[in-house]
Image (tube, rainbow over all chains, first blue to last red):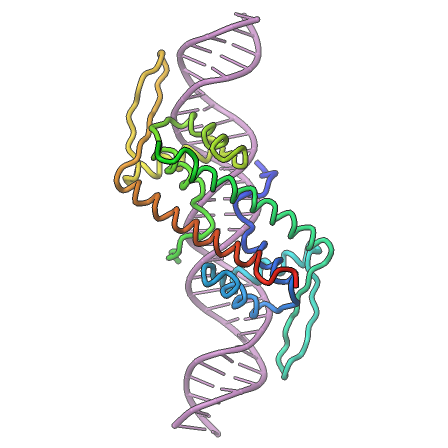
Length: 112
Length: 112
DNA sequence: CGACAATACCTCGAACCAAAAGGTATTGCA
DNA sequence: TGCAATACCTTTTGGTTCGAGGTATTGTCG
């Protein structure tokens, strides 16, 4: 059957993307490197992850893009729409919830 | 192609299961409720998630099970093996890594 | 000038996880 | 009797992510 809820665990790539784009306009290739450095090398997402997510987000109106020629090369810069900012808040909350939940479970009870 | 890296995001159900079973022997149906309460209602995993993970973990030697009749009903109790304890440590580390990575990205730079 | 790394975009196929729903059987209780 | 709860399990479905590949341009080093 159809899965009504998003897989609740995931959306981390989406969250990271939105977060970085909320800070500044960026293009895909740049995001790949930004994510690695923003997470202190803890998370590396390949282009095969980035581009599809970018396209999906644009399709549903969370991102807007504009092409910009830079030295003969074309870059596609993405930025957040209002909808994207709302989505970011949602994902942030989801993340906090599950992050807190896991933390409780890991720490709870000690080794009693 | 085979995926060399673990899906970096996941293994949360697995982590939770191992963690609880490290504290005390439990059976599947019980775990469903324990997870919900141990995570402060933040995470609810259905039986459709629990059982397959349980079976997979047993198959690869991280868990051992024993059947126990309780009031005419049969319960299958699971507990950790040494391998399971090692696996738990791994997953715990993975989780810390990505948790820290996401935290960095979310907090970094503030809202400058 | 020729080769090769880096930049920059993209897509496809497979793998994998987890959700929902369904299926069986027993016990307890109203 | 019938329905809810306990207890086990599997199957289908669907979404996400991964790796690998594919194109084209620019910059650079010999």
